[in-house]
Length: 251
Figure (cartoon, rainbow, N blue to C red):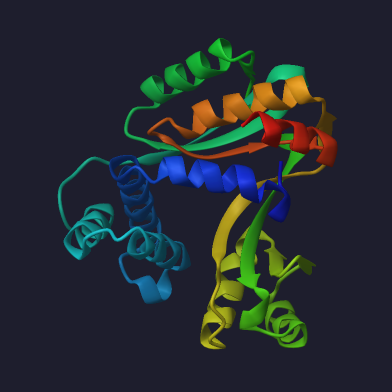
């Protein structure tokens, strides 16, 4: 499930629900702390931290809260240490899932993820049994009115991007994970504003599912995304326009 505009209606509804201030802040704080721990507290030299910082600002997080999270992550203040964990699983209809989480307690988070899968028609999978169905890529989205295609290609490809595509009015720049920071820095230096930027899992192939299986998997994704420790959920299913229309009429 890796499309963009095709999922806008569902994503917008989900975004509205996720706007619950406490849950949103908790996720951003964890991301700030992990980014600072991995790359230091200087946002000018830490692309992941810059992205988390921007998300915090967009969510209207108080500056004091934001700065405290960065200092805790960098070891300048005492606090809980969060680690990144990766989970794999299968949903209804054999849909494959990759889940990233930030947690201070792996056993708790693993048990919680397993419970959500089992209660929603899915199951956890052994490490590596699903990962081969996905590729890890840096993905940067840029509104089409922010830059011309020629300029974007010149800057991004020279900095190490793999590909540039356009869907509706949005450019998508794809990079290898190791080139993500270099491409981000090049875009920033050129004054090109990004809409979204992260290293994520992209399905190598997608399963087209019927209405029932689509609804079941959308429900599973929602339950997983609502978990405090879960940061991102990726699944390899596709929904035809007809099924999408039927689901929209139900909602």
